[in-house]
Length: 182
Ligand code: PRP
Image 1 (tube, rainbow, N blue to C red):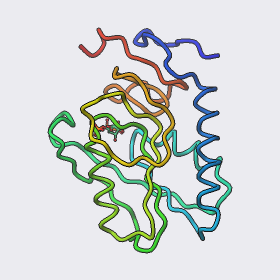
Image 2: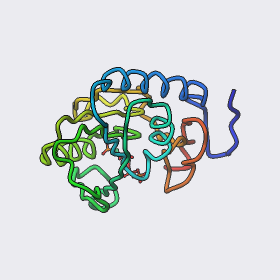
Image 3: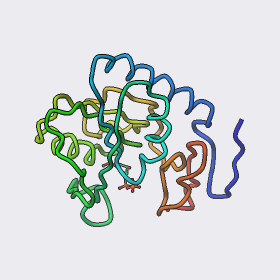
Image 4: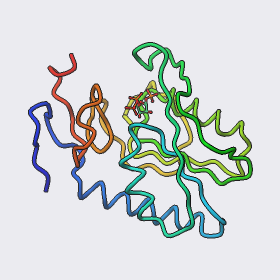
């Protein structure tokens, strides 16, 4: 049972026990689906996915390796949909089984870009694992193979998610008070 430890947080949306249960369920499905694969390459998207990825990969029993990318929106918001790579993978992924790991889908612009970029590099397979997706009817509809939670369209922080780089290390996913970001 989590307690709110910061005055910026309005309420806890998903507590840490629920998150960890769901992460174990996702890992079990991934283990099952990739049971016959020589190795799986997990691609975590910084910064937001680092906590989710760290927990997810430690639950996996299949052979796997981890690498990271970081992307940035042009301008201050993702609203334009323009995304650029600021940190790329160390190795080519041709012939690799790749699982893209993201913390959140909001507008969908980031994930669409990443799926297109990775697919263009000819992996043996490409799937996507997302911790949370917002309930936004106008969001781009994208294939997500492993989804943790659908959450309300409010500003969320914790478990990797931030507001101006703050609150990423809260153990739960919480809704930020409106007066903090409005
Ligand atoms: C967040 C999140 C996703 C993206 C989702 O990253 O980690 O990558 O936004 O938004 P979208 O669906 O509207 O494209 P952010 O740019 O905040 O960077 P961070 O992960 O470093 O916090």
